[in-house]
Length: 228
Image 1: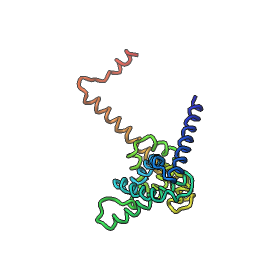
Image 2: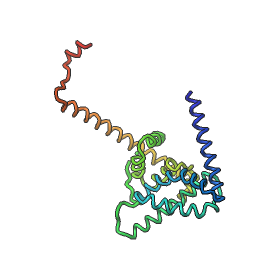
Image 3: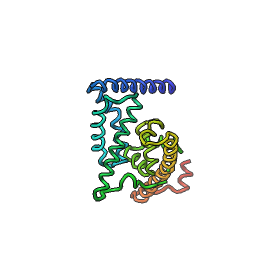
Image 4: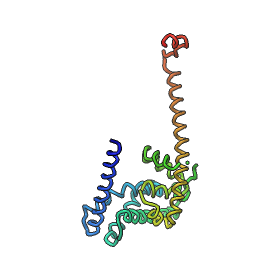
C-alpha cells in the first residue's frame, strides 16, 4: 500500500507540473486564466523567499516582481523550472533594490546583509522545516549567514535545482550546493537544540502542575507495591 500511495503522489506531482507547464505556454500567448495559474504556483514560494530578504515588505516587493513578470512573460524562453528561476531572479533584484533604498533612509530594522550567524545533518533539517510552522521555519533560515540562507531558500523553499539557483545568485551550482548543505547542517543543530529546550519546558510545566494541584499527592512506594 505504501508503494502504491507513493506512486499515486508522484503521478499527482507530474500531472500538476504538466498543467502548470501548459499554463506557462498559454500565458505567453496572453491567456489571463493561465497567468493566474502560474501566479498561484509560484507566488507562495516567492513570498517565503522575500520574507527572509525584506521582512514585512515582501508583499510590496512581490507586487513589483509580478508587474515585471507580466510585462516580460511573452519574451521568456524556457521550461517551467526555467520560469521559476527567472521569476525568482526578478524577485531577488527587486528585493536588493528595496534594500538599497532602505539604506538611504534611517534604519528601521536589520537589513538582509546583517543576518545573525547562528550555529545548525542535512536531510534532518529539511524534514524538520517541513514539519514546523512557516513563520518559525523562515525565522530559522533567516538566522543563517546570508549566502547559506539564500541557498536554502532557493533549494528547499522555492524548489530550484542547483543550476537554476546558481543562475539566480550568479554563482556556480557547486557553490550553491555547498552553501545549502552547510546551511541545512546548521539548521539541524539548531532544531535539535530547540527540541531539547521544548522537552525541558514540558517537563518543567508538568512538575509545576504536580506541585500546584491541590489535593493531589504522590503515591508512596508501599502503595505502588500493593498496586502491583
